[in-house]
Image (cartoon, rainbow, N blue to C red; front, side, top):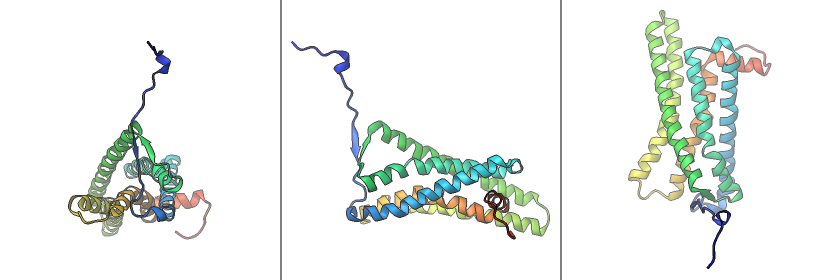
Length: 218
């Protein structure tokens, strides 16, 4: 009779094998390059926005605090998928544990919902400020700020809706299109959001230029 000590027992966790982008295996290294650039842009842009708002007390206002929440959400959303995606495409790290996969899915769904909530709150805040700010020039400035929110909402929802609709109705759409759309949906908005707000929000733009000691007319 053979007995096993407690130390001999091992819990074997199930895992999944991620195949990458089906049909484009030979081009995966090239596809990883723009994805890596998008991820780096998301990291640099959102960290810059967070640092700028955190270090400037004059920006501790609801509009900028919402923007800081959006940047933090974007950082988590991009980081929940991009590292593993790049690992699969670049170094063929195809295996992912069951627990890690569940955690990744939780972060994707939770922070996607959180980002939607922040965008709605920001839109409501800007709408109220249109209603409250007197004068034609001030209202025009408020509408200009609303334009940046509309751009961000379109960037976030259009790729996502297109990806969902292709999964639901696009039976003939190739698998690699589904994979690319899902990946871009989680990387493009976090990369573009800081650029949109950096260009449209004068206070953020001024502070960032001041940090990098760039002089000139703004």
